[in-house]
Every structure is written in C-alpha cells, then in structure tokens.
Image (cartoon, rainbow, N blue to C red; front, side, top):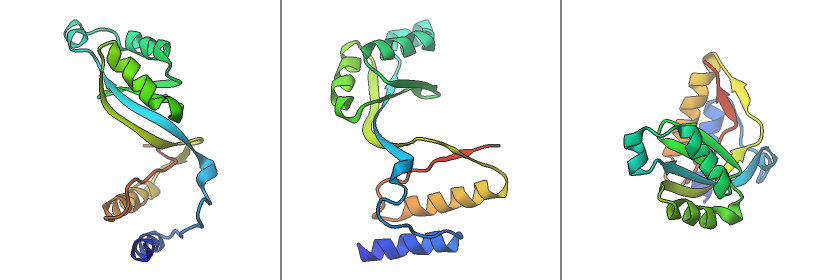
Length: 142
C-alpha cells in the first residue's frame, strides 16, 4: 500500500500536483450505477432510432441516459444496478458493461496546453499496477 501511495504521489508531483488526504475530493463525485447498453440485434438491422432506445431505458427506470458511439450509457442509483441490468436484458437489449462508478457532479473545463499534461498524468496513474480506477471531473474542451 505504501509503495502505491508513493508511486501515485510521485506521478502527481512530477506533473505539478499534490496528493490530498483521504476523501478530500469525494464531495466532487457521487456513486452511480453505470450500464453500457447495445441495441438489439434486430434493431441494428432496422436502424431503430436511438431516441426510442433512450425512452425505453427511462421507462425501465434509468435516471440518466446518454447516447454514445458504442450504444447508450445508462446511469441509476447504485442500489438499483442489478435490478435495472436484469430489466434491460429482459426486454432483449445487450448489456456490455455494468459497474459502480464515481460520477463527477460538476465538470471543470480544461483547454490548451493543460489538456495534454492532464491526459499524460491520468494515463500514468492508470498504468500503476495497483490502481483500479481513475476518475476525473475534467471536461476536455478542444
């Protein structure tokens, strides 16, 4: 554990940051259930409107739904993740991923030269063997 903390601290200090105390930024995030849902096979061929899929997810109990390239990202209360996953699969959709995540409450716009520096720092943190997940509230503006 101490080796990992030292490694993370070193990465942050090299990029001009510092390591905060336990829970020092937890107020910036909230725990959510996350599902990545793919279209039904028959709907892929029909080119069904993604808006209909979004409405169906809301009808099934999703709190928030976002259309992405791979399908639809669905967010829910953490305690409802398993129940919502089963409901979505029950109507024939494919759930590609289901997990608990820390969702940023407010995004901070980041642009210019800071973008590359921050992306390199996040990438370095993800490469640390004992780091399981890296969350950010950065909104990369082009």
